[in-house]
Length: 94
Image (cartoon, rainbow, N blue to C red; front, side, top):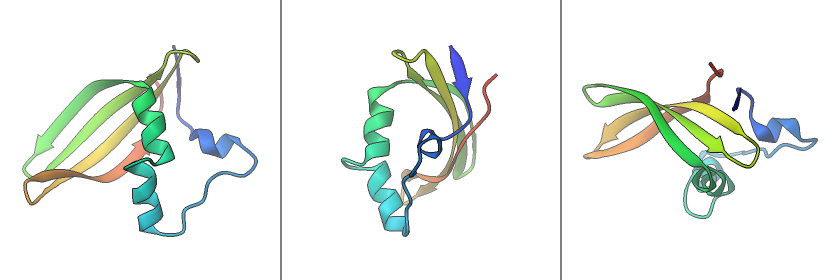
């Protein structure tokens, strides 16, 4: 399996551009394109650490058709008893 560390949308001539936090949230939730892409892939939880009200979770999204793994790291923060994503990045493959 190939691990990549770049955003698919940056590989096309006209990548998607978000102009507000609401647009990003819409893309990551509901019927958003990024959410649809993520949920179409197998997800593997690699590692997680929790310190008080914060956590970091490394997740690999596996595209079986392309034989690729997309390694990501989510920063989480607990707010009102619910975990919320506070940061996200794609990390290099190993």
